[in-house]
Length: 284
Image 1: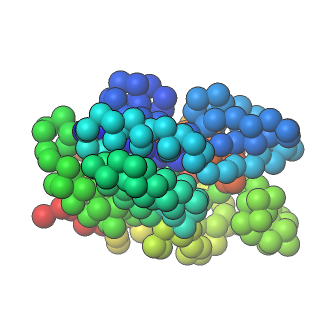
Image 2: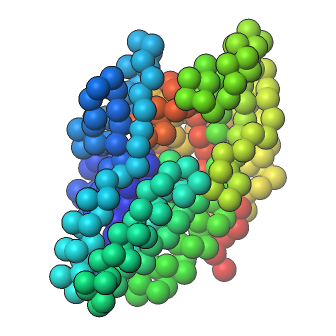
């Protein structure tokens, strides 16, 4: 079985190579140049450009790439699973469905399941890692799809940004809100609802945000000591490690993974962002 994932899952390039996962890169635009996320640009370069005052843009994965990959899958006779970035945040999922349907007209035997994860960053990345684990165990595609859909529905995302100005540049918040937020050291706390980023509240200062994240994890998480919790950060590893230490002290989870927020998401959230991912319900 072949597994496909796009670069918005924020897993490192080595993961795809080591685990035989086909990477579908989203595209990053800086000035007049276009890059393929993970493949021809990495997020540290994107954060450096943002710090210099540039505003990178992003666009969905190329339809031509989907066509190539899905035709190859059809000719191979293998089954395929594509876990996609939330359709509320990118058109990539919908493009993949369109191309799959197009390929099935020529290759009716194509066996490809596409899941709209409604997740982002490492919330999405944890789903991809779970699919790889289940494939190694020899689970059939139908069972893998069932488990991944359950986990996608029950993955919590808690997210904050260091500077609202980065989100204002991308049109995510108003410029007025960004200016006021900067003056008052306001940090927004957001989560995901049905695949959309939704504000929960605003807090003054990073310490209060971190304390509130722990409170929400306590309220929403189930058996956190049995979970792998993921942290992604906007080129601020010290912030992520501080958060990790607090989580380990409070909940003693099985594991805490840390990765950098990738280009596709980091272009909009900027340096200093932090996101937490965990489950609110364990698979029965």
